[in-house]
Image 1: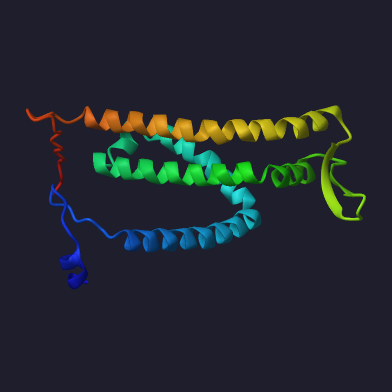
Image 2 (image 1 turned 135 degrees about the horizontal axis):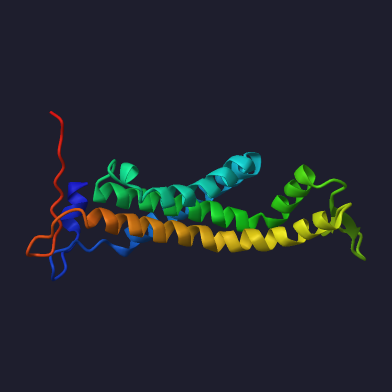
Length: 196
Protein backbone atom coordinates (compact mmCIF):
# COMPACT_ATOMS: atom_id res chain seq x y z
CA UNK A 1 0.00 0.00 0.00
CA UNK A 2 2.85 2.41 0.80
CA UNK A 3 4.31 1.89 -2.70
CA UNK A 4 1.00 2.98 -4.20
CA UNK A 5 0.98 6.10 -2.03
CA UNK A 6 4.53 6.98 -3.11
CA UNK A 7 3.61 6.66 -6.78
CA UNK A 8 0.67 9.04 -6.49
CA UNK A 9 1.40 12.61 -7.24
CA UNK A 10 0.55 15.50 -4.98
CA UNK A 11 -1.25 18.50 -6.41
CA UNK A 12 -0.35 22.15 -5.67
CA UNK A 13 -2.05 22.06 -2.26
CA UNK A 14 -0.23 18.92 -1.19
CA UNK A 15 -3.26 16.62 -1.47
CA UNK A 16 -2.81 13.24 -3.10
CA UNK A 17 -4.20 12.83 -6.59
CA UNK A 18 -5.75 9.38 -6.92
CA UNK A 19 -5.48 7.74 -10.35
CA UNK A 20 -8.67 7.66 -12.40
CA UNK A 21 -8.58 3.88 -12.80
CA UNK A 22 -8.58 3.43 -9.02
CA UNK A 23 -11.48 5.86 -8.68
CA UNK A 24 -13.37 3.96 -11.39
CA UNK A 25 -12.74 0.62 -9.66
CA UNK A 26 -13.82 2.08 -6.33
CA UNK A 27 -17.02 3.49 -7.87
CA UNK A 28 -17.78 0.19 -9.59
CA UNK A 29 -17.31 -1.65 -6.29
CA UNK A 30 -19.65 0.77 -4.54
CA UNK A 31 -22.30 0.28 -7.23
CA UNK A 32 -22.01 -3.49 -6.86
CA UNK A 33 -22.36 -3.25 -3.08
CA UNK A 34 -25.30 -0.86 -3.49
CA UNK A 35 -27.07 -3.22 -5.89
CA UNK A 36 -26.67 -6.23 -3.62
CA UNK A 37 -27.73 -4.31 -0.52
CA UNK A 38 -30.75 -2.83 -2.35
CA UNK A 39 -32.01 -6.28 -3.32
CA UNK A 40 -31.49 -7.62 0.21
CA UNK A 41 -33.10 -4.53 1.74
CA UNK A 42 -36.03 -4.79 -0.70
CA UNK A 43 -36.73 -8.35 0.37
CA UNK A 44 -36.51 -7.36 4.04
CA UNK A 45 -38.85 -4.42 3.37
CA UNK A 46 -41.45 -6.63 1.71
CA UNK A 47 -41.21 -9.19 4.53
CA UNK A 48 -41.25 -6.75 7.47
CA UNK A 49 -43.25 -3.86 6.04
CA UNK A 50 -45.02 -3.04 9.30
CA UNK A 51 -41.70 -2.76 11.14
CA UNK A 52 -40.33 -0.35 8.53
CA UNK A 53 -43.53 1.72 8.57
CA UNK A 54 -43.25 1.96 12.37
CA UNK A 55 -39.62 3.09 12.10
CA UNK A 56 -40.62 5.53 9.34
CA UNK A 57 -43.16 7.19 11.66
CA UNK A 58 -40.87 7.01 14.72
CA UNK A 59 -37.87 8.82 13.21
CA UNK A 60 -39.57 12.25 12.79
CA UNK A 61 -41.15 11.89 16.24
CA UNK A 62 -37.72 11.17 17.75
CA UNK A 63 -36.21 14.14 15.92
CA UNK A 64 -38.90 16.39 17.42
CA UNK A 65 -38.19 14.99 20.90
CA UNK A 66 -34.45 15.51 20.39
CA UNK A 67 -34.81 19.19 21.27
CA UNK A 68 -36.09 18.45 24.77
CA UNK A 69 -33.47 19.24 27.46
CA UNK A 70 -33.27 15.77 29.07
CA UNK A 71 -32.59 14.12 25.71
CA UNK A 72 -30.38 16.95 24.46
CA UNK A 73 -28.18 16.63 27.55
CA UNK A 74 -27.23 13.08 26.52
CA UNK A 75 -25.42 14.25 23.36
CA UNK A 76 -22.47 16.39 22.39
CA UNK A 77 -22.70 18.62 19.31
CA UNK A 78 -20.74 16.07 17.28
CA UNK A 79 -23.00 13.32 18.61
CA UNK A 80 -26.13 15.18 17.53
CA UNK A 81 -24.65 15.69 14.07
CA UNK A 82 -24.05 11.94 13.82
CA UNK A 83 -27.61 11.28 14.99
CA UNK A 84 -28.84 13.73 12.35
CA UNK A 85 -27.02 11.96 9.53
CA UNK A 86 -28.21 8.57 10.78
CA UNK A 87 -31.84 9.66 11.07
CA UNK A 88 -31.83 11.36 7.67
CA UNK A 89 -30.34 8.25 6.08
CA UNK A 90 -32.91 5.97 7.71
CA UNK A 91 -35.92 8.10 6.83
CA UNK A 92 -34.62 8.74 3.30
CA UNK A 93 -34.09 5.07 2.49
CA UNK A 94 -37.44 4.02 3.94
CA UNK A 95 -39.17 6.90 2.11
CA UNK A 96 -37.69 5.72 -1.19
CA UNK A 97 -38.86 2.16 -0.51
CA UNK A 98 -42.34 3.40 0.42
CA UNK A 99 -42.54 5.36 -2.82
CA UNK A 100 -41.40 2.40 -4.90
CA UNK A 101 -43.95 0.02 -3.39
CA UNK A 102 -47.14 2.12 -3.45
CA UNK A 103 -49.26 -0.58 -5.11
CA UNK A 104 -48.11 -3.27 -2.70
CA UNK A 105 -48.74 -1.02 0.32
CA UNK A 106 -52.22 -0.20 -0.95
CA UNK A 107 -52.99 -3.90 -1.35
CA UNK A 108 -51.72 -4.75 2.14
CA UNK A 109 -53.62 -1.86 3.70
CA UNK A 110 -56.84 -2.90 1.96
CA UNK A 111 -56.55 -6.55 3.00
CA UNK A 112 -55.79 -5.63 6.60
CA UNK A 113 -58.29 -2.85 7.28
CA UNK A 114 -61.09 -2.75 4.68
CA UNK A 115 -63.85 -5.33 4.40
CA UNK A 116 -64.59 -6.67 0.93
CA UNK A 117 -61.34 -5.34 -0.49
CA UNK A 118 -60.31 -6.44 -3.95
CA UNK A 119 -57.17 -4.79 -5.19
CA UNK A 120 -55.87 -6.38 -8.40
CA UNK A 121 -57.61 -7.73 -11.46
CA UNK A 122 -55.83 -10.11 -13.80
CA UNK A 123 -56.27 -9.00 -17.43
CA UNK A 124 -54.90 -10.29 -20.72
CA UNK A 125 -53.52 -8.46 -23.73
CA UNK A 126 -54.39 -9.30 -27.33
CA UNK A 127 -51.27 -11.47 -27.46
CA UNK A 128 -52.44 -13.50 -24.48
CA UNK A 129 -49.96 -12.05 -21.99
CA UNK A 130 -51.30 -11.59 -18.48
CA UNK A 131 -50.85 -8.38 -16.52
CA UNK A 132 -52.16 -6.98 -13.26
CA UNK A 133 -54.35 -3.90 -13.28
CA UNK A 134 -55.04 -2.21 -9.96
CA UNK A 135 -58.68 -1.71 -9.08
CA UNK A 136 -59.91 -0.56 -5.71
CA UNK A 137 -63.18 -2.12 -4.60
CA UNK A 138 -64.57 -1.93 -1.09
CA UNK A 139 -68.01 -2.46 0.46
CA UNK A 140 -68.32 1.03 1.92
CA UNK A 141 -67.70 4.45 0.44
CA UNK A 142 -65.31 5.22 3.30
CA UNK A 143 -63.21 2.22 2.31
CA UNK A 144 -63.15 3.36 -1.31
CA UNK A 145 -62.04 6.84 -0.26
CA UNK A 146 -59.35 5.40 2.01
CA UNK A 147 -57.97 3.23 -0.79
CA UNK A 148 -57.93 6.13 -3.22
CA UNK A 149 -56.33 8.61 -0.79
CA UNK A 150 -53.68 6.29 0.66
CA UNK A 151 -51.18 6.72 -2.23
CA UNK A 152 -51.47 10.51 -1.95
CA UNK A 153 -50.89 10.32 1.80
CA UNK A 154 -47.83 8.11 1.31
CA UNK A 155 -46.35 10.40 -1.36
CA UNK A 156 -46.93 13.42 0.89
CA UNK A 157 -45.24 11.65 3.81
CA UNK A 158 -42.33 10.61 1.57
CA UNK A 159 -41.42 14.29 1.26
CA UNK A 160 -42.72 15.49 4.63
CA UNK A 161 -40.94 13.04 6.96
CA UNK A 162 -37.38 13.75 5.73
CA UNK A 163 -38.11 17.49 5.85
CA UNK A 164 -39.39 17.31 9.43
CA UNK A 165 -36.43 15.18 10.46
CA UNK A 166 -33.93 17.55 8.85
CA UNK A 167 -35.42 20.75 10.31
CA UNK A 168 -35.90 19.35 13.81
CA UNK A 169 -32.39 17.94 14.04
CA UNK A 170 -30.96 21.24 12.79
CA UNK A 171 -32.94 23.01 15.52
CA UNK A 172 -31.54 20.59 18.12
CA UNK A 173 -27.98 21.19 16.88
CA UNK A 174 -28.35 24.96 17.05
CA UNK A 175 -29.93 24.71 20.51
CA UNK A 176 -27.00 22.60 21.72
CA UNK A 177 -24.45 24.96 20.16
CA UNK A 178 -26.04 27.96 21.91
CA UNK A 179 -25.28 26.32 25.27
CA UNK A 180 -21.53 26.80 24.81
CA UNK A 181 -19.49 30.01 24.56
CA UNK A 182 -17.90 31.03 21.30
CA UNK A 183 -14.18 31.78 21.13
CA UNK A 184 -12.65 34.75 19.30
CA UNK A 185 -11.88 32.66 16.21
CA UNK A 186 -15.53 31.59 15.89
CA UNK A 187 -15.27 28.08 17.32
CA UNK A 188 -17.47 26.71 20.08
CA UNK A 189 -15.91 25.59 23.34
CA UNK A 190 -17.76 22.56 24.69
CA UNK A 191 -17.47 22.16 28.45
CA UNK A 192 -19.10 19.27 30.34
CA UNK A 193 -19.25 18.52 34.02
CA UNK A 194 -18.68 15.03 35.38
CA UNK A 195 -19.47 13.54 38.77
CA UNK A 196 -16.05 11.94 39.31
